Image (cartoon, rainbow over all chains, first blue to last red; front, side, top):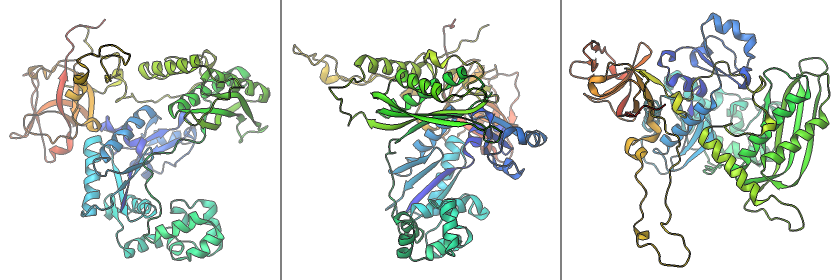
Length: 417
Length: 141
């Protein structure tokens, strides 16, 4: 048996934890640069606030309904997510962190009234963290995902949905389209539809042999999972990222090269920091810039750069990223987005230095460790590459950011006695 | 008056491996007895996932030893009991008071503040139990 615990409207709920005045009220959270809506509380959804809509477009609607608007405060969301995970470890020795707001629990061999257990989990996470969660329980991970959808959307479930018999999951499978199923994207959904398979129930009933021949073993596995046969095990150790991308839209679109250079310096050093955290080195990077595809004269370009040797040096990666921008920059455009991708990574453990080639010096290793230590201690951005510049309007626009209540001493919630 | 604030400058915690280096020579007789140094975090925080820190502001709890600027250690995993110092959400605002379950009141620690009556579902408004408060006795510049 698996449980999937999913935080309801995670980011919006995080904003309500230390603001009881906002509970049961419409709240939305905006993406980086306050670009578009990325989370909506239940009440905001009920008002018809659309998901992923540009903020400026729906601003009148939000103001009319007095919706509370927050800029994404990922320091807070990350810490709350960590707390939810830590709490969940009390309910199962094996958990998989699937995303910032979803965790799988392995309940194998637990002889328990599962509906009750799901309710206990839900209540505990609310009491301890003030995070509302939905719990889906089923014999496979794919069905647990579906059960979670049921927990959220079937009012009588009250946030906990147990699919422990074929009768129950078959009923729910018949209600939903194939694209509701974990791993079935819209493309695959269209292909299935052309074969006359529309509902998830029809997919579950289809011949696995035929599915493997027409698609692949992954879809065949999904069919088995939909029939209550567990094929996907828990991934307790998250795999290292095979590529690291750092990309962002500009708050104010730059029309000259200088802001682009600063931006890629910053993105390169952020990506390098992530690279060091997972103990990898990079050999090849990709750099891209583009203008808004919704405006005339769309320009987009990218380039791939081989670094002289495997490295995790922010300075070296940033220098090559800047060089790349100089090569692909064309004047006369207002750029919307720039990004740096570290695309060919090698683990430090498996890395073998070539004695005939240059390699990263020990001094650089020490310098990078020091840089990371300073930023860990004094907060992100305490020490940074001068080439990334100090914010001159181009870093993130975050007009409505809440305090980092749980990660900064200066931002603790204030309680009137 | 400037409110004294307790703000640690570092969150690093150290774990000793050995008291002496591994080089030749006489090993420290204390090596076999090395323990982790006392960590105030362990003392103050019993349920890390459910514990939040907050800053008190105001003078209604001075009778219970909580002054403006004190750091409050709030544990949400505990069931609130009679006599606990609690954080409550009243009309959407967070406040710190003492829970009186017998009289169904939230009491202040200062006569100038009248008690607040608790209505039907009192447990709904209790946000957590204040298990410790931390005072700084030397003003920081």
